[in-house]
Amino acid sequence: MSNLQHDSQNWLVVLTTQGVMEATMIAERLRSLGIPAIVHNEPLGAIYGLTIGPLGEAKVLVPESFFDRASEALDDGSQSLDDDELLEDD
Image 1 (cartoon, rainbow, N blue to C red):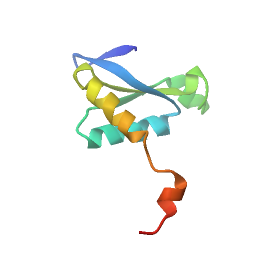
Image 2: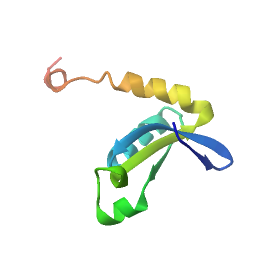
Image 3: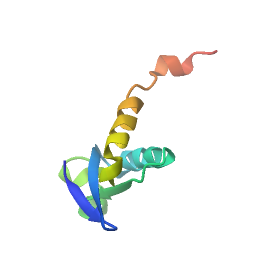
Image 4: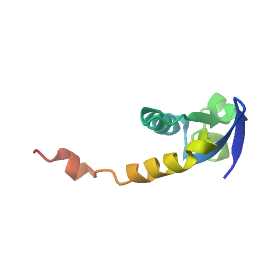
């Protein structure tokens, strides 16, 4: 678990993704739940359009005080509906 100092708070990596788009969507989901979140990525990867490997990684960070809550929210979100359930009519 790596960390980052930001705004005098200790921010912890709650999730690492391949690509900024997925990390941004996850950070927005956390923000919608009242959990502050930022996305950190390697700028060189963005310049070259890399989405795989270390240069393509993006990290979602949350303040240390929100880490447990964010982890639980992401664990709950992994129990999402599959495609067949989404297509069913009520």
